[in-house]
Structure formats: structure tokens, C-alpha cells
Image (tube, rainbow, N blue to C red; front, top):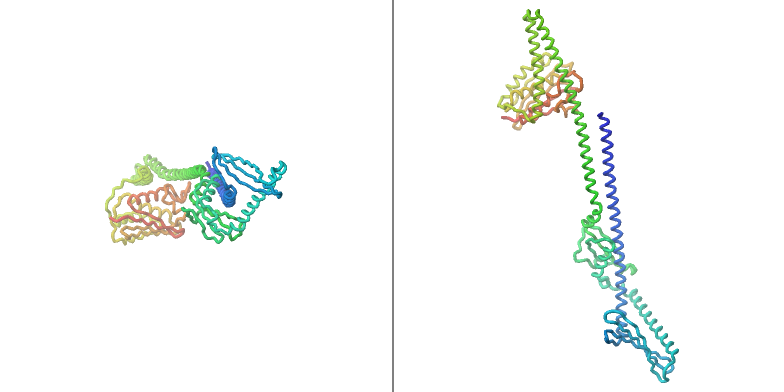
Length: 517
């Protein structure tokens, strides 16, 4: 699959997943917003009704108190008879002709339920009994006067409430227990069954009352409603109710909790897809690197195999067999190319060993690093001098003893020096400097060259297996891309570290840090 197609599929799938997450989050926000609006409207309706009930309770209390006075005044006689409460009220009406009409109003109330009004008329006077028409007229007058009396009594109550009730302090006008019950009842009617705290404030903002468990934090949601709003502004009150933030948030978000798992599943799906895409791209890159490795290995093996094959064919010639000089020369070529092949194969086998075991079987022993480095330098000096360069050796470490595997550590130094020779400038001889020193209980070794340098983007990858700055079938520099990967694995197996510093056109420095013996 082409890289562009992989990226196109990745972008489409990623956009779809992100769009799905965005839609889910938007839906949750809309649901929370609607839930909160519904809650606020319910609270406002509840507070409004509670304030209205408060005014009704006050009006009802005034009417009841006034009626009680009237009952005490009018119903001056009562008795219980046959399971009924008998209440009597008498009116004396004068006809203006020395005749008096006694009107008795009897109310019979059953002790458990029901009531009946029984008006009766008795005549007392000097002229004898009244006619039926006169009795009816007098009855109408009596009822009319009774209506006028009750109407006047109601007007007196209204007058008292308008001009006198608001003069009382709020603490005397409000039954706070009744108010708490009204608030709880109205909230329940609006589908809100949450814990709350409330208090009553005066027009001046002073606290008149608060519930026993009143508690408020800066995060709590507070709602307010005017009480006795038809009174003068200085006599009004404020009913304030607040809900604990954690309880309210739990109530609001309870309707969208079922959406949280779906978002988590979508995120997991997105992360899994990104990881899968990353693995596909990485696998594709690894495949390209391995293909480059196979191409480079084929090229590296092709030349020595061809040389060995040609030398073997020449050895079969009888004239060559008769010339000891030619025979020795061809034998030397075969031996040299065979060593070259063996060295390349050893590199691959060494990396395969690290890949399978994750660590190498090292034969550790105490060595003088200076002596070991001298031997490598003497061997490599011939190659460097053939290109017109030279090697500087600065053994300044006071304690050069390290605990290493001699063969592998020698190969590490040889690989680094070989890279310096491969990546030297074409028009400038190689100057290679090796320096040792001690720092913080470690043995330090640096190899600096004046080669072509390494770009910053390549510097981070040079220790990766199969990675080469020149890839594909570019063979201006020989190799498999295994040398530095092998170097890093060996140094880490010795408990040390290696780092590279480089600038294009100036050169490269490798610094090795190993623990001292």
C-alpha cells in the first residue's frame, strides 16, 4: 500500500472519530444545558408559589382570627345533643310599630362531619302575631343586614392587612416551619427532590432567619425570590435558597452519565486506530529499511564473491600454477576477500544475537584501555595514512582500567574509526583524534574527526538498526547500517553510554562513557 493512501485513510478515519466525539460532547452539553434550564425554571416556580402561599397563609390567619372573634361574639350558646353541636345566635329586629321580631339562627354541626343552617322566627310584641308577608320582609332585612355586617368585617380585615400587617417584623409575619414545608412540597411538585438550605433576608439585607443546617460555599447555586412583594419596598423580604454544588452537579449530570462510556469507547477506538496506523507506517518503514539492507548486502557480497570466483578460475590455469608469485598473489586475494566476507557476516550474526537474546554473552575481564586502544590505532593507522590523514592519540586518563569484553570492545572502536574513514571529506585528508580522561568515577573516550558531519535530523537515528544516511542503492559509502547499532548495543551491555555530536562540514564526535574497574 502506498504511503499517500495510508495517510489518506488515516486522515479520513481520524476525522470521523473526532467528529463523532465532537457530536457526543455537543449532545452532552445540550442535555446538561436543558437539564439546568429545567431545574432553574422548576426552582423559580417553586419559590414563586412558596412566596404566594406565604401571603395566602397570612390572609387566612387574619380571616380565621377575625371569624373566631365573631363566633365568640355571636354564638353565645352551644350544646351537644344527639351527636350534634348546637350553636345559637339571636337577632332582635324592631318593626317600628311597637312590634319586635326575634330571629334565631341555629347551626347544627355533627361532631364528625356536616352542618345545617336552621333559621327560625319568633314574634314578641304588643299587637299580636305578624302576617306572613311582614315576616318575609323582616327576614330579608335581617339577612341583608347580616350580609352588610360580614362585608364590613371583611373590609376591616383587608384594611388591617394593608395598613397594619406590613408594619409587623418579618419574623412575626412568617411561619418558618410552614415556609420550609411549602418549599419542599413545591420543589417535589416540580420533580426536584434535592437537599437545600434557605434563609430569609430583610429589605436591608440583614438576615432574619436561616435553617438550622444552613451552609453555603462559593460554588453553591443560589436562587432568590421576593416575598410580600405588594408591600412597600422597605417592608419586603427576600427568600434565598441554595443547593450544594456537588448534589446539584450530580442531579444535572445524572441524565447524561450513560453517554460517558460511549465517549470513552470512542476515544479508545481512536487511540487504537492511531496506534494501528503508526504500526503500519513503522512496519512499512522497516520493510523499506530491510529492502535497503538486502540491496546493500547483495552489493557488498557481490564484489568479494566475484573476486574470489575470478581468482579460483585463474588458479585452475596451469600457467598460474607454475608461477609461485602469481599463485601467492591470487591466494592472498582469496584470503583477503574471504576475511572481508566473514567480517560482514559476523556483523549480521552479532546483531541477530542481540535481537534474539536482547543481550550478548560477554567474556568480561579487566583491561588497560590505553593498551587496547594503542593496538587498534596501530592497526588502523595504515588505512588512514593511505588517504593522507593522521591519527592523534591523547591518553590523559589517570585510571584507564575498565571491565570489558576485549573482542567486542575492540570491534566498537574499529567500527567508529571505520565510519570516520568512510565519511571523510573527499578533498581533505582525515584527521582523527582519540582522547581519554576520567570524570565522576567513569572512563571517558572521545573520537573526533573532521569529516562531512551529520545533519541534526539524522543524528537522532544513526544508532537505529539498518539506518543509513544514504539509503536505497546508493553505494558511495559501503555498509549495512548495522555498525552504530552494534556499537550502541555493546556499550549498553557494558553498562555504559554513547552519544554523538556533529555539525555539517565541521566533523563528528563520539563520546563513550564506561564505569571504572
